Image (cartoon, rainbow, N blue to C red; front, side):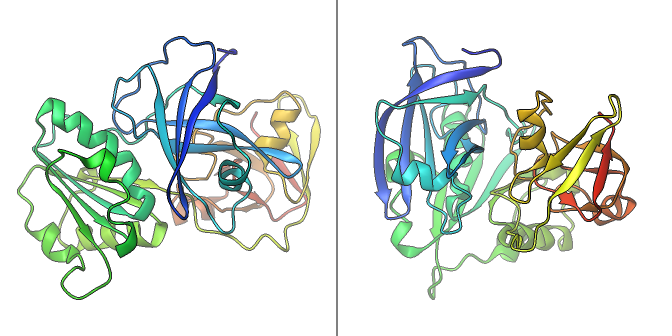
Length: 319
């Protein structure tokens, strides 16, 4: 351990599909890992061209496992650098800095039934859910919408698991989301994970059918991509000290301030969890998160420094 971080060693790397890599991680000092519950994730510090990135990955290992953690990473064509590094540079035996496990997507223990809907790689947090339900006996069902060629990729994690169905874009295999949601008994909680458009479709359908907001739980795999070609540099002033720091066009506010010894608490670093929410005292924000509502963004009183930027030359932050 280093302060609030862990040192992990890559024990094994396995390509389970052309764009998917399974990574097994163990404690670099040979000791026990902290326990992690169903739905937990860790952040890995990964090297990129000229900089490092902190990417969050769901743990697909058995909840409570302390000998090793497993993650599955998809190689993103427009990668910031993290997934490309894991796919092209990471080697067995390498050591990585990681966060302690966090959990923003745990199953609700009081739910009568758990309905999970995954889009592609959005299956990963549900692999730990299934292991948890196998031990607890929680009533559940998992529906996975994916490419037909990827329907068997996750078989090693699904062996002996019940209540799992795969769907893909072919006659007789597509998921009828409205029918599925309408058929659920009272007391069911809905969990959705995957790309933003997929999640929005499922959630919009659920709300139209009368699902209560507190029975719907989401985990995005990153905010929608933004065109960064026109990004400009700007400055941030810290209200408590008056000090001003430049923010380069290709660096986030969180990253820039971290290098100056100003550490803002983060979790996903992709604008979806709200952990780094920061009050804005002056300046105009260019919001790029998926956490704040449209009304909150229009108020221009707070922003997500992990992904959002400035339209003005200066932002004054309540730090």
